[in-house]
Image (cartoon, rainbow, N blue to C red; front, side, top):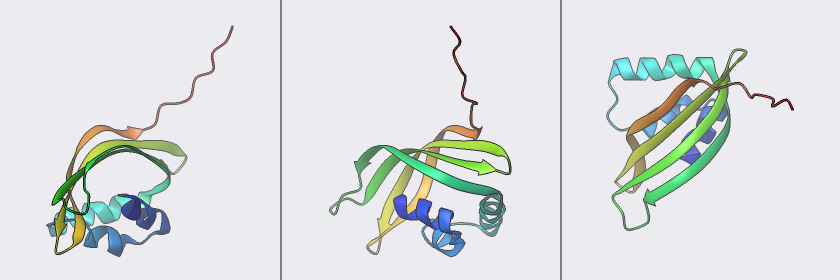
Length: 109
C-alpha cells in the first residue's frame, strides 16, 4: 500500500498499474485520467489485516489526502491485496469515502 501511494506521489503510473491485478483497458484509462488530476499528499494507514510473509491475502484500511486542482480530496478505503509469484497486487477495495474532503470548521466561543 505504501509503495503504491509513493508511486502515485512520484508520478510513477507504471508501478501503480503493474501492481494492480487484472485491469481491463478501460480500467487502465480511468486510472490514468484520475492519476493525472489528483496530487496525493498524505497517507494514513488505519489498519492492516494479514498480509504477512506466510499469507496469500491481506487487507489495508487507509485514508489518503490530496488535491484536485484547488479542491482537497479524501479517499478512505479498505483495500484487498493478493500475493502472486511473491508480489503483492491490489485486487479491489471497499470505499468508505471518496471525493472532496470536508472543510475544517473553526469553533467559536
